[in-house]
Image 1 (tube, rainbow, N blue to C red):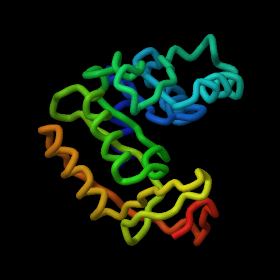
Image 2 (image 1 turned 180 degrees about the vertical axis):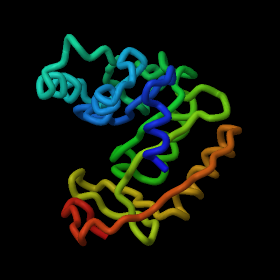
Image 3 (image 1 turned 180 degrees about the horizontal axis):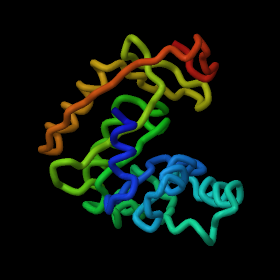
Image 4 (image 1 turned 90 degrees about the vertical axis):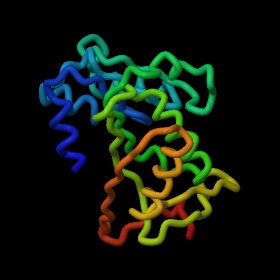
Amino acid sequence: MPGKVIYWIIGSQYTPLDLGCCFAPDIRKLVYDGSPSQNMYTWDWKGEFLDLGHGLFNDKEALKTHGFAADIFAPSSALGEMDGKIDAIYAASSLHIFSWDDQMKICERIIKILKAQKGSVVFGRQIGNVKGHEIEYTARAGAKIWLHNADSLGRMWDHVGKETGTAWRTWAELYDVDGRWNQDFKS
């Protein structure tokens, strides 16, 4: 399903946002495949990542995306300028590093950024688990994060929909990644 969304964006007049983009390789791939870069937005917590991406890909002059750094939890952040302007949000590896409550806040913020129209979409990938549950995240002392399964992801979006007066259809799949596990995640 995410692949279908990506090809829906390519060559279109849709306005996507890569949420938590880091160096923004995914947006660059869309541009390489023919999507107009001037319609695209990239956001990360840290502006240094955006600068490092330009250095890595040597495309500061050529890439016309709109990139910015902001605190997604701050109501007056630069994300406020995006409210109601985005058709598609790609959130890859950006939710699973937060608790259930913080993921809910981020999803509520995502809904404000999206155009209030049928067809607006949020898609991406996260680290998950066959059992949706909270675990300790050792990369941040004392932090707890929520790893979703398909059921808990659906429950979260149902709750966010009720809070925001919106309706969401969720789809999720879990993939075993050759048994590898990041040591920062302790179940």
